[in-house]
Amino acid sequence: MKSTGKSHWERFYAAVTAGNDEQAEKLVSLLGSTDEARLLEMAQGGADLRWWGLRGLAAVGDGTVIPVVAAALEEDDPALRAVAALALAALYQRHSETAPPFLPRLADLLADDDGLVRQTAADSLAQCGDAAVDVLAVALNSSHEGVRVRAATALHRIGTLATAPSLFHHLEDPNPLVRHYAYETLDQLGLLTNVLLKK
Image (cartoon, rainbow, N blue to C red):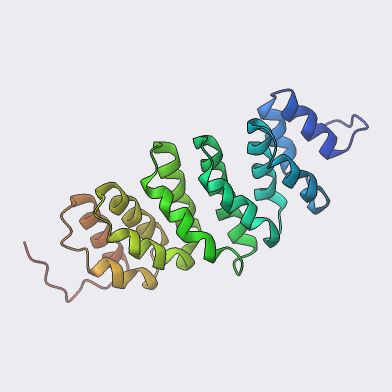
């Protein structure tokens, strides 16, 4: 990327305000911690600015921005809810001690009205690994079949021993996809060798 004499932030902000999403995405990775305050300001601006503010915080934010990101999980715009979900997972990777209290709010999106938001929430919870197991176990007991399927999928992707207790209880779940993910995960963990499954 050739130099224009402008800072990474200036070029990023110019790309965002010009609607050049491809360029903005390239420049996100060049932002740094010194840009955090401006990204926080963006995350509370107009809809498009908010989206890119959240996207930038996902890349460079510290643990103190997590409450702002988590609040965006309740935005009216599904695109903002989805990017907030992705941002929370990204922040968890760097600040695992700060993010877990907000994971129940992320799990609520497993029942979101928007399909992309539902899928993004499941993917983001899976990225949080064992920290998300408890909230996914609660979701796995939901009366909402779609929520149970997405929770089972996320637990399957996590695939650690911590997922086993909740999945054991769903080997005979009414939903065939939940049963499938429970069986596959437990089998991969080597925990079904002596378990007799009822037909």
